[in-house]
Amino acid sequence: MDKDLFELGLSKRKSTLGSEYVEKNLSEADDFNLDFQRQMTEWCWGFGWGDETIDEKTRSMMNLTMIAALGKMHEWELHCRGALNNGVSKDEIKSIIHTIAIYCGVPQGVECFRIARSVLESEGKL
Image (tube, rainbow, N blue to C red; front, side, top):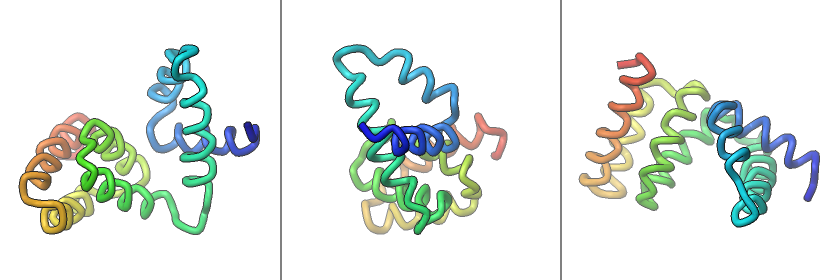
């Protein structure tokens, strides 16, 4: 494990998803999934999100579209919250969902709007 990359990843992960969420995931990790949590933090968040070529806001916008295309809606909800933390506005989320509906299908857009509404309401932005 690259400790510096892990620490960078941990910082990026916490700033996007929230410290409480990340700490809970790490504290609940056990011998079955701890290695995955560490590697994902190092590789995805350290190597991927740590590359400053693309800023966090843009990366969040990209993630929303890619995760929607994969149909991983639990992760989409998590990253919708993260996108708000990274400065993505309600109107930008709406436009992202329009694009998702065009390229991934209207039912996927409907599902994204349903989840986004719940997230925006819980964050006091709707």
